[in-house]
Structures are given as structure tokens and as C-alpha cells.
Length: 295
Image (cartoon, rainbow, N blue to C red; front, side, top):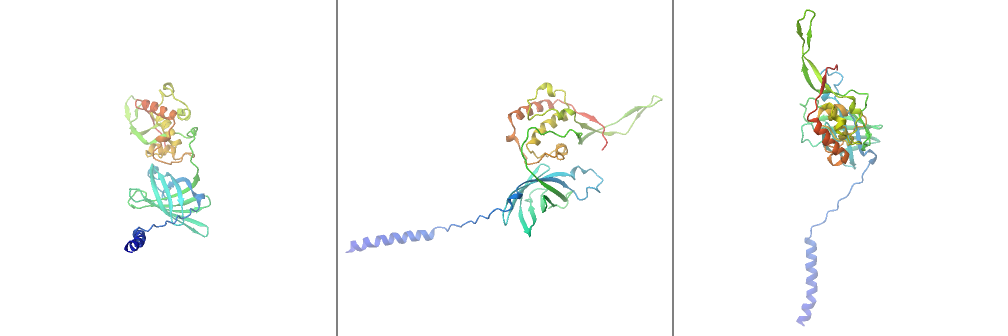
């Protein structure tokens, strides 16, 4: 009789232990994935990033006018994930979209961990994102800027070239040169030193280092700035965000240029890698052509 009782009790104990284990197991949380909205806004928005005082400012405007790219990656009811690229700096953006009867606005915040971080306040007006950026650090030279951005598809195109109607003068790099004049009586008059700037030749419009394997004869007589521009045009085609002022001045105004990321090494083609090595080798020994230019 005892054996029968124990055999009957054993399954009951097993079930009790199993139930106890179930109650001790941590409860699984169910995450609700919010649906994505306004996917038509995804992608790159590109345009000028400028100060409100641009027209009144009498100093050097090099730091005042730049190209801004905002890449909108994801939008839900509560969150917008994006990325800003300007002056070679790529920063994550996190914020929120508001849709008030068809009027779409954004507030997007950079992390605040770097000197030039700030907040974007954006309104969609027709096909344009327009708005203001305010730096967290108000002591910056330009703590407030405005922007107007148009949606632009970025894609690599090896045939893209700098527009030939522009003159490429490096306004960020100059040397002072004293002019010496000989007067009619034979005396030498030393005039005030003037700034001389380095400039590029027309070869930058003819040599494409993304489509053609360059030879030494192609580049051996080029100026240093020529070699640098030909090389950096490769990077610009891949959407490289230039940090150096010289190349921002050259590429930011170009219509096809879209700054996308800080490193494009993995995107370079075998032809481009080969040409970059050759260009770097000749750049070490090349000289620049300096001349006086009016601004």
C-alpha cells in the first residue's frame, strides 16, 4: 500500500517542481516595434550652411559659408535617426518629427560631446528642408547658422570632373612677397609686401585619375596644387567629407559633390589606388605657382 501511495505522489511532486521553476523564470518583455513613417524623406539633403550675418560681415568669410549634408535614416512616431556632415565632421543626430496638419518639422540634436555640436530646427517647405542650427557653445565664432537643403541622391560616378569655368586659387594658403621697382633715376624702390596665392593649371580639367591609369609623363611637370586636386577629386567622387579648408573651398561649391563620410579607403578602385600612389610620390617634390590675385 505504501508503494502505491509513493508512486502516486511522485508525479504530483514532479509537476509541483516544474511549476515552481516556471514561476521563478524571468518574464520576457515584449518589445513593440514602431512602424516607420515618412520614408519619402529618407536620404541625403544637401545645401549651404551659412551665417545670418554673412552679408554684413566684413572679414574673411571662409568659415561662414560651408556645405551641409543631412542623411535621414529612420523616422518613427517618437524618433528620428539621422547624421550630419559638415567641414569633415560626421555627427549622429537624434530627435523627433512633428506633423501638424501636414506641416512637418524636426528637432535634431547632436550628442554634445564635441566642440561644434548643436541643435537643428528644421521645417519642410515644399521640396526644401530649411531651418537654423544653434551651437551648444555660444562662445563659438559662428554660434548660429541657417541652411536650405534639397534632397540629393548620392552615387559614385567616375566621370565627374571639376567645372572648368572656375579658377582654382588656394585662398587659404599664401606667402608675402615684396615687390621691387627700379625708378627712372636708377634707384630701387621696395614696395609693400603683397600676398601671393598658389593656383592650379588647366591640367586638372584634363586628367581623370578615376578612369585612366596615369603615367609619369602625364604628371611630371604639374604643379603641386594640380597633383593635390587631381588626387582629391577621386575622394570627392566617393563622397569624402574634406576637413582641410583648401579642398572644402574647391569642392563645396560644386553641384555634384555630396559629403557623405570621413573615410572612403574601402571604396577606391584598383585604378584609383594605383594613381594615388603615383600622385603622392610626385607631390613630395613638386613646386607651386604663386601669383597675386584680387579677391
